[in-house]
Amino acid sequence: MKKNPIRGLVLKILYIVLVFLLLGLIYIEFKGVDKTQKEVSITQLVQDINAEKVQEVKSLDNEIVVKYKDGTELKTKKEEGSTIGESLSDYGVDKAKLQSISFVFEEQSKTFDWVWTFILFVLLPFVLFGIFFFMIFRQAKTGAAQTFDFTKAKAKLFGAEGQPKEKVTFKDVAGLKEEKEELEEVVDFLKNPQKYLKMGARIPKGVLLVGPAGCGKTLLARAVAGESDVPFFSVAGSSFVEMFVGVGSGRVRSLFAAAKKHQPCLIFIDELDSIGKVRGPAITGGHEEREQTLNQLLTEMDGFEQNDKIIILAATNRSDVLDPALLRPGRFDRKVVINLPDIKERMDILKIHSQGKPIDKEANFREVAERTPGFSGADLANVVNEAAILAARNGQKTVSQHDLLVSIEKVLLGPERRSHVLSDKEKKITAYHEAGHALVSALIPNAEPVRKISIISRGMAAGYTLKVPKEERYFRTKKDLEADISVALGGYCVERLIFGDMSTGASDDLNRASRIARAIVKNYGMSSLGPIVFGERDVEIYLGKEYEETRNYSENVANLIDKEVEKIIRKAEAEAEDLIKHNKKLIERIVDVLMEKETIEREEFEKIIKEGAK
Image (cartoon, rainbow, N blue to C red; front, side, top):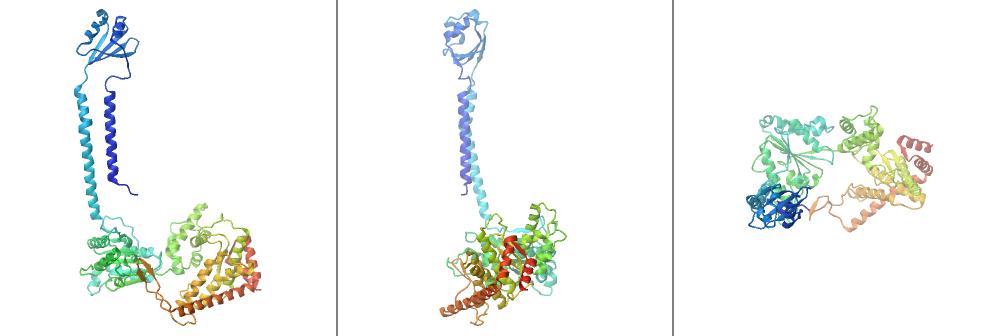
């Protein structure tokens, strides 16, 4: 729970008041004579004076402090209205003996006591209350200022005069040749706007960068700003939206007002889908904060007031949910699609991220790139970083090829769990399961070749079979998809044939096989139902939930879809079972090696397959 600063201030002031009051009481209590001194009667004092035991007598108003020759001090009181001499004489003191005693007379300062009493009990409370109200008013003033700042955009400004600038150029972005060519026009316009304006050309007001997460959309936007050498406003889409209605639209206005002062400039909005989703029915009465923010953004991008020298870059990996009004010409008129890097681009990315790291001369980035299809730039950066961490942990001076290959599996599946010891039975089931995947993948046509088999636990997997395509593939045929289903069912089939039972370890494989088979029927039109896509893919948003598919077919068609899916899976299952039944010796050989070494690399696995084929 957040603490109340006013309450804390009040408590501090009360503590201070209590401390001062306590100090005042202590002063009043202990001022003057020490109250721990023992008292002596005036009669006894006269007797001690006559006996020449007394050295000094100190008089403080009616209080008398007597110091004896042996060092002890006692106190007594004299009668009011009489002097100390008169009091002693009344009790028969020897006047001759009085002459040998030193007398000290002190008078208590009434003014001093009065001043302290005034300061502690009158002046100090007024001072403390004055400080208290001053702090209260200052806090209220600060709160009011913060209220007005609440609607200011939380954008970071880079590249303006006096601002720190970390320059990123297109050279720092590996690959993306065509994408960089698209954005070079934007850079050229920002550098030489008159060249285009003379021809009557209008540069795109908005450029939308679309692609999977980690592909370099943000880095590419920073490179555009670095190449054009203009101020660069960077803001996240989620920073516009607050729980209060009107704050988001106010921040959009504030952002564009600040950008107009730095023209020409760039505005980069990351994760645009957080504010740019399709507007749904006005369930909340038209005052939904995200929609108000989107409406204001649409107005600023293409309203009555022209922002000719402000270019908006935005990034998203969910372009399918964006509002059509946001994508029309005049707003985001250019769409740059950034795909996952191919093998050559992956090699370039690995080289960039290996700069500044002591990579072994024998390290082969080509092999690392071959083993990482589907990896984004962020994934590859993580691979190199994990390899460097592994090398440092092992006390190595350089990052070896082995470190890079191990880090691939760590990024894919998680760290090894060697402490997670399987029982002999579970280990054997895992070995047969992975051997089934590997055998079907090696023998069935159109399947991806096996790179590695392991029964060492990683992440949530008890074992894994790593398969990597021979070359980059952008399309998949029906035979390729059916081969993927057979490979996925290989572990399930071998468990049932060898042990006569099935384990829960095949649940992910069955889920993957079912998804592929249903996609063959519903999305790709590859079944006997014909070239028909079943289910609408338009995104609908209702009560904050996205429904990515609406059913546009009858119950009879749904039954036919289920039957087609079952037929595809049964066919793939029969193929996997047939391969396993005719190659039991190969399965046993793979299992024996796995039980002994726990891991089989590609070269050794291919050797086992060739020997079994003879």
